[in-house]
Image (cartoon, rainbow, N blue to C red; front, side, top):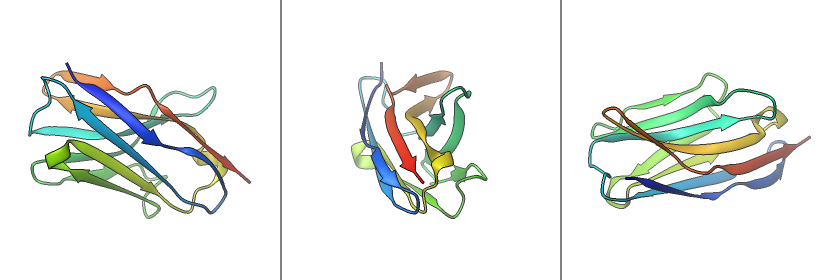
Length: 117
C-alpha cells in the first residue's frame, strides 16, 4: 500500500501564496511513479491541477494554473510539493495528493485551501 500525508493549505486572501506538500510512504512506493495534485471545489467534480513524474522530471499543469503554480519533487523523500501563487477565489477547494504507478492509484485525504476576495 501507499499512504499519502498532506500538509499545508489554509486560508489566504486573493493574490496570496500557499504551499502544499505530500509525502508517500508504504511498501508499494517505488522510484518510478507520478505524483501530483487534484482539487475539488464545492459542487464540482475533482479536477487535475499538476503532476510530476520520476525519473525524467516530466511535469504537467492544468491550463488554469499555468504560470501561477509550481510543482516540485524530492525523489529521495518521496515527496511532492505545490507552490501556489497569485491565488484567486476560483482556486478554493480541497486539494488531494495523488500517487500513480502502473495500474495503481492512491489518494490523500485532502487539505482545504480557501481564497477570499
